[in-house]
Image 1 (spheres, rainbow, N blue to C red):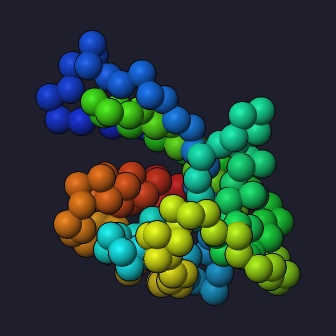
Image 2: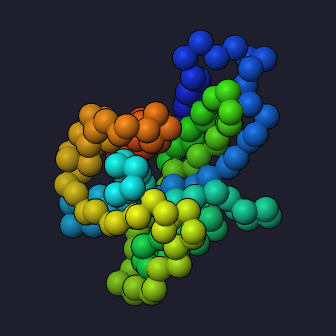
Image 3: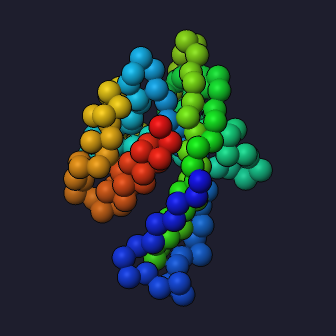
Length: 157
């Protein structure tokens, strides 16, 4: 399934040529789902990040989950692609339902993730969906991210 999101009043000619691809993980364990919370910008998101040159979307989700959480993905099944179009950037995000094994490694957070002051939060699915739908961050882009994650969760499970 592919969903497209357009910024309000965005005309086709104004869509940004700054195009990025990312992969995101939906990780459920014991009836809970894993979210990342940015203490710095006060918003929630699914683990994941940008796809590197010559990297597949699935390889990216394995790498990003390991870097951000320390968890090893044992299985990943793509469920939805969400394309977002804004004046300053365009995104194509691939979402995967991921199984993790019991092996845990050290995190390898990027400078940006350290800046965001990321913490792992396990929540019951209904609470995670509610938070992504209703939490209001003071940063507009953070609210766009939570909207995207909400759509991915509700269309994947």
